[in-house]
Image 1 (cartoon, rainbow, N blue to C red):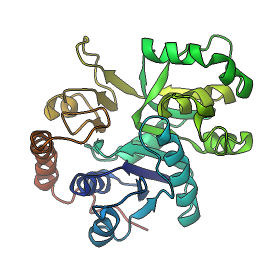
Image 2: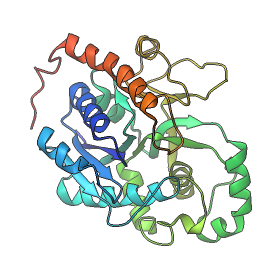
Image 3: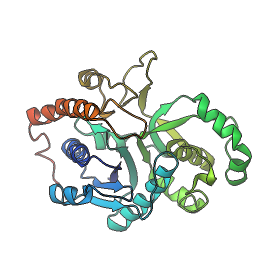
Image 4: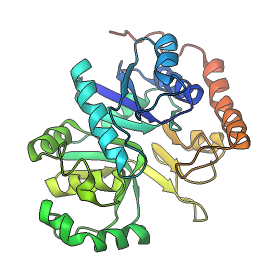
Length: 292
C-alpha cells in the first residue's frame, strides 16, 4: 500500500495543534507519516510541546517567514521536501491546524480516492469573483510561465483546509521545477496557495479531483461528502458526522489569518471538546491495527 504523509500547518496555538494530531492518529489505520509545519517563529515553543506529547511526529520549522496566502505555498513545498528527507512517503496531504479527522479510516479513505492521472484532491470551491479579478490582472505573467488547458475555469480550485498532492503530482511538479523559484514566490503575484497549487496541477495535464463539499457562509447547504469544509461559522459536529464526513473543517469560529480573541479561543475549545469526547467514548478503535 502507498504511504501517506499528513502535514499539519500552523503559525500558533500549540494546544489546538496537538488536539488535531490526536484526531489524525486516532482515526488513521494505515500508519501514515504525521508531521507539523511551523512558520518560522516558534515563540510559544510549539515544536517542543509536540516533541514531548508526540515524539514520533516530525516537526518542520521554515527557515524564513512564509506568512498567509501566497506564502503558504513556500511552507507547503518546504515541509514536503523536508518530510521526504525524513521518511519515505508517496502522497502528501496538507491540512490546516483547525481541520480534524472525525471518522475511522480517514487516511485509508484518502488513499482509496487516488486515481491514476489525478494530481490533486480536495474539496472544490466554485470560482470567487475576487480571485478571477486577480488572475485576470496577472494573466500575462502567469501564462508566460505555465500553460493552462483549453477550457480552464479561472478561479476554480480545491480549498487549502485539506489538499492531497498525489505521487504523480509530486513527481510532475518536481520535473517542471514547480518546487523552485519563481514558482515558490507564486511569480510575484498575490494568488493564494490553494488556488496556485490547483493552477499548477491543471497546467501539468493531471486531474484535480473533488472529494469534498464546500459550504460557504450564507449559501444553500450542499450534501456532505467525505471531506466537509465550511467557512465562517462551523456546522454542528453531529451534522457533519451523520452526513458521512471523514475530515472536517473548521474547528473554530473565526477565520482570515488573524489572531483569535479570548472569546474565539473559548469557542474553539468547546467545539473541539465535542470531538474529543467522541474519541474518548469510542475508546481504542484501532487496537487491531498493526503499526509499523
